[in-house]
Each structure stands twice: as C-alpha cells, then as structure tokens.
Amino acid sequence: MTWLNQRSVNLTVQACRRRVCAFLVFATSLILAVFPALADDLYVTNSIEGTVVKIDAAGRKTVIAKGFNKPNGMGFDKAGNLFVSAENSNTVSRITPAGVVTIFASGLHGPYGVAFDTSGNMFVPNWENGTVSKITPAGNISTFATGLDEPSAVTRDKEGNLFVSNEHANTISKITPAGVVSTYAKGLANPNGLAFDASGNLYVANYYNGEVSKITSAGVVTPFLSKQNIPNAVAFDSKGDMYVVIYGDNKIVKFSTEGKLTDFVTSLSGPWSMVFVPEAKGAAASTIVTSTTPASTTTVRPDPASTIATRPPPKQAATNSTTSAPPAPAAVKP
Image 1 (tube, helix red, strand yellow):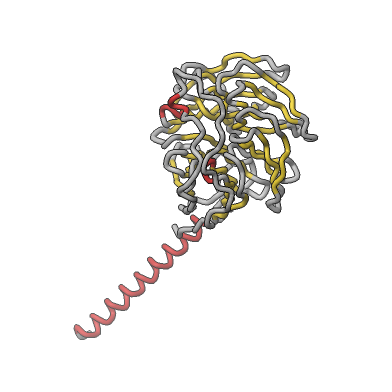
Image 2 (cartoon, one colour):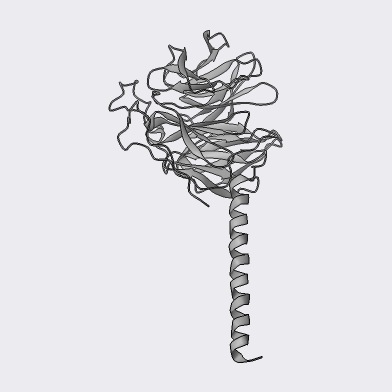
C-alpha cells in the first residue's frame, strides 16, 4: 500500500470516529433531555441565584433551570410537570419532564407556595395581598381565599384541605375545599415551609426561632427540631426521613427515622423551598434551561437573615409591581 492510500485510510477512519463520537454526544443529549427522574430526587429553589436544582439520593446536584426572579414554591402535577413560583416577577413557570420552561401564570401578588388538588387545580398563596389564588389546568386565575396575613407556604392533606402558613400572624390557616378559612394552629414564629408525615402530623419550619414544630391532627403544637439557622422548608422522602432547608447555612439537613441528624447537601445559594418527585411520576430532566424575568420588581418581603433578632415589620404596600407576563423562558440544549 502506498503512503497516499494509507493516508486515505487513516483519514477515513478518523472521519468515522468523529461521526461515532458526534452520534454518541447527540444520543447522550437526548437521554439527558427526556430520561425521567427517580421518586426520591429532591428539587430545591435557590432564591439568591434564581435557580432550581435537582438533588439525587446520593446528594449530587444538577441545575435544571435558572434565571428566575426569587423562586419560592414548587409543586408537581399528575403529569410530572414541575411548577415554580417566582415572587419578584409575580409568575408561576412550568418545567416539563423534557426540560422545557414556559410562563404558566402571571399577574400574581408575591406568589409563594404551590399545591394541587385531585382535579389538577393549583393553589398559590400571595404574600403581598393576603390571598390564595386558584389556577385551573387551563391557566385561569381566580381568588380562592382571602383575609390571610402574609401567607407563604401551602400544603394539602388527604381530605383535600389546604394548610397555609401566615408569617406575620404566626399561625397556620386551614382552608376547606369549599374555601372556608379557620385557624388551625397558633403561637408559631414566622412559620414557613409545611409538610405532612405519613401519620398526618404537620411539620412547620419557623425561621424566626430556628425550630421545626410538630402539629398533631388535634392541633397540638410541640417543638420537634431546634437550634437551626433559619429553617425554611420541610419535606419527607418515601422512607419517612425528614429534610429541612437551612437557609442561614445554605444547606439541607436530613433527620432520619432513627433520629440521626446529618447534613444532606451543602453549598446552596439561599435555598428556599423543596419538593420530592411524586412516586411513579416522571419529572424535569437533567437539562439546564433559562428563564428571563423583568429587572423591575417588588422587594417588600423581609429578608429572613434580618429577622433572627428582630421581628419582621408589618406588611407594606407593594411598590413597582408588575402584572404583565415576562418573556417566555428559552430552553438551552445540554
């Protein structure tokens, strides 16, 4: 074989290798974009850097969405779509299992938590005007409950009742499916994140006094976990282990059913809320996406870091709030 023929063979082999590599990269990208998450994958909002992070059972972190303007609450619907409320842009975004992000609802008033009923309706507390909005699967918004006091987190029990934490009143409100509001628990300390355990006990993160409270089905409140640096959210995995967002330390701690407290993940950026993937459901893929939001926003919400020694001030009127939808988020290929 002449040197010219040998060179042609080498070039052909190299070209084939490049094509194989390109195909493998392409195939890997497709897998990353559509492969569903596992049931015990934990999703966390980072309010400072404006991201949503997926954390697997081993504690490995993957940014799945970014560009949110103070992302707060999250919740999955039956189809495995992840919905994220962004307080400062007054919107709720939807992240599909394929990683596509769009604005689902706008014109809210400092939206915070996210919860769903069995019909797929979404319920979102509005921190600024003391209401809970109901958003249908078609995106139609109506007022479901009023008269709350800086409502933040929301969760739902097996009977379909909503439970909402009132940061300023230091109470938990119960809202029936018919919209009847009553006080379920009092004497908390800037309550935020809420979660039920398998026995029906409600757990509340109190960021003012560093405690997680346990509230029985009879409404009895007792301290469960203390001496934490601004606990802000609570969640349970499929085994019954409790996870608590520690905003002041940028981490999440795990409290096992055996009573052992350990750091689960660290080096977050203002972690605010979290949610586990519902069992047997897909979830947002491990794909980085971006969300564009307006630079002009309301900032009346007190920073938890400033409320350790001082109670937050009374609710103020919102200023410079936007009610128009921001540009639709753009997906970025992995």
